[in-house]
Length: 554
Image (cartoon, rainbow, N blue to C red; front, side, top):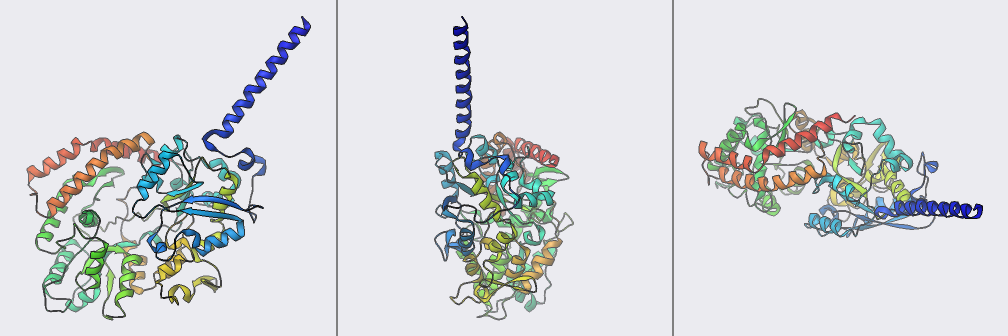
């Protein structure tokens, strides 16, 4: 009996050990995660990144969209000298994978559906179908909180010292799922977009920079009638815009803040509402329709692409538009000044209208941009990957990613990292953005903190500095929606509703403004009822639930 009893106990012990071992094996292999040696344990928690990170060469795959500025001079981000230097220091080689330009969203969806995933995925997660929650829940990407606590001392410090960044980087439950592109100075860089006019035309006609909607109307009439380009022809286009696939008409939506709304979701007294169904939107449409009828707006605005838009500005045809400080104002001034010294641009204040205040469409208080580097569940080198990403938030990595290599692309002058002539007087004739693209990803975006000193220098011209550092910073950003995060279910439902609404709303916006549909009470009411019938009230409810959770974050 004793032998039999001992045998039973032994068999039970073996069974228990086998079950525990199997469970442990299952957990360690779930979601394709790496072995425990790569993940590490609490005991190997680090307080600084020691270089090199690896003793033996390691290659990680990194998927991200290509940037046109980079594509002009290189095949992939691996040619950027900052990343090449980081490889030398860390011992980790990054193999960049870029989807074809124009196919980024489709390729992302195909990649995620196939589960054939790279080690790192840099994407606009907050706007992806289902939001980041979907990809966390289906096991495509992993939660990073514990890994950051163990292996990312620089990023952890950044979050601890900046509660507003931490709030924006987290999901509602506190999950951190990516290393984001950060602008810790916020408004100083985010005020990079706004209304721009030909200042030389204003000066020639004796006009002041417009401040109100009425001022804009008077200015556009003068541009139309008084031959500011001086060619003796009535060929001026007072206001132009651009888009793709007929979306140029949406550029006119940048005037909506003057009516206290936005051309989409906006914050209204602490709650999210939908601008294109508000009574004020009808007034906005009526004004734009009148301007279009008076030919103050480009009659081809709905079909303009980038090429047509550029042509009209650089051939002295267009007098005003909404644009970027670097990509538009700076580029046009640099292109035109050498051959036409009188060519000049000015950033106008965001116009004041019936709302009685200068509101902007720019999220000036946003510090975490909606793109970031997530780590896929297929990554078998979590510890090393986390440290590689974290190094980019270190003081040394910060300088590399923003300025390139000291002594080559920048020099320290009285404690200030000043770009060299290789950036602004490139010997190969590259524009400053193309030249900087060869050295640092700051000109685009990356998992990093974009430095204000980078921005101060790329805005070389006084016109840019005046607009970005003074004029546009005065606008009120309170209409803009913060970086809220609907749940996976909410996000999918929201996409289902808004895909239909956006198509209809854009179509009707064009018809109303271009006079193809009368803005009578009956047609307006039918338009609003149609949007309601498509589920806008449910969409607004979803957005407000997400906003409420966001506001409760610590």
